[in-house]
Length: 443
Image (cartoon, rainbow, N blue to C red; front, side, top):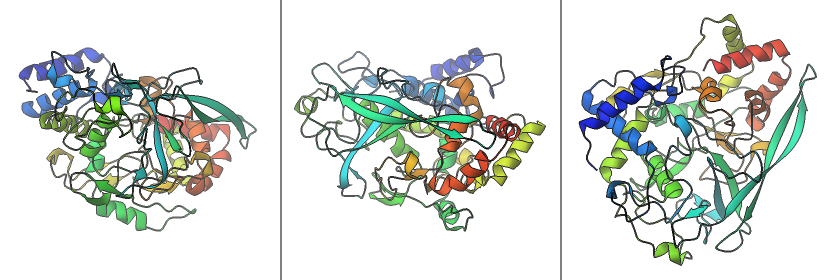
C-alpha cells in the first residue's frame, strides 16, 4: 500500500479538529506524536500508521486489497477497537455483556518448543469469538463477578470484585484442563521509549537490592525474527521481546491478519473450515504496512504530567514514595540507542515502571505460566497517562483483567511483592488517600 501526502494533510486536520483544549488533556491526548517529529516524511509515515491502526479490516475478497484478509477467526476488526483512543479497554459488567475490549488467553499444562505456553490443540492460544462466513467462531466467554470487601484504617469499606469465567457455544469441543487468562486492551502510547531501554538496564534493575520483599526479574522470551531467546518487555507478562513482534502477534491473534512474522493463518489443525478459507494475500499485511504501524506506535508520546505545582499532588507523591510504590513503579529511566529511530534515543523518561516481572500474590494469579513468568507474576504496568484514563476511557478498568473499577481498588489488589505497600496504603487516613489519588491523577 503506497503512502501519499494526503495522509499528512489528513492527520494534521484530525489534530486541528480534535479539540480546542490543550493536547495534554483533550480526548486525543494519547494520539500525539513525540515532540521533535518534525520531518514531513516522518509525520506522513506517522499518520499513515495511525490510519492503519484505526482501519477496519475486511473479509477477502474486497475492492481494497490493502486492507482485506480479516480472519478466518478473529475477535475484533481493528486495532483501535481493543485500544479505544489508544487507551484502556474494559471488562464486561456482567455475564450477559460481550467482551468487546477483553480477550481470553488459553493454554494447556506444559510448554511449547521455545518454552512458551502450550496452545490448546483445538482452540490455539486465545479464544476467537468470531469467524468469517463459512467459519464458525470458536465460542463465547462470559464473565461473572464476585465481590468481597476490605476495611481501611478509618473504617471505610471498599469492594473488590474478582472474575469467574465460563464458556458457551464452543464449536470445537469442550475446554477441559485448560488454563485461562483474561486480558483487557492496554494503552499503546510511549511504547517506542520502552523499546529503547537497554536490556542491561532491565537486568540492573532486577539485580538491585530492594526492601519490603520486592524482587523483580526479566522474562526471557522467543524472538520470531532472530530465532533466539531475548529479554521480554511488552505484554502483560513481558512475553514479547520487541514492539514489532508485539504488533504482528496482536494482528495475527486478534484480527487473523498474517505478516512476515506470522505467515500462517490463525487456524489449528482441527479447524478444517478455517484452514480452507481464502487468504487475503501472502502475507496479508505487507512490510511497508508493518513498518508504518511500528513507526506510529513507536512515536506515540506519553502525555505530560499535570498539576506539578499543586501542594496536594506534591504531598501525594511523597506518600507514594513512602509507601514503597517506587520500588516497582520506577519514576525515572533512561533510554539507550534505538536501532531504528534516533528520536527515541538517549532520553530521560518517567514511565513509573521497571518492566520487570513481580509476584503479585494469589489474588491476581491466573495460574498460567508464560516463559519464565509464573502464574502469579505480572509485568509492572507503566503509570504514565494514568490520570487521563477516566476522561479518555470512561468506565475502563485497571489491572490486567479490568477488575479494579477505581485506583484504590487497584492498589488493594496488590499482594505478594506488593503486600507491604498495600498495607501502608490501607493504614492511610482519608485525607492522605485523597492526596495520593491526586498524585496518581497527575500522571
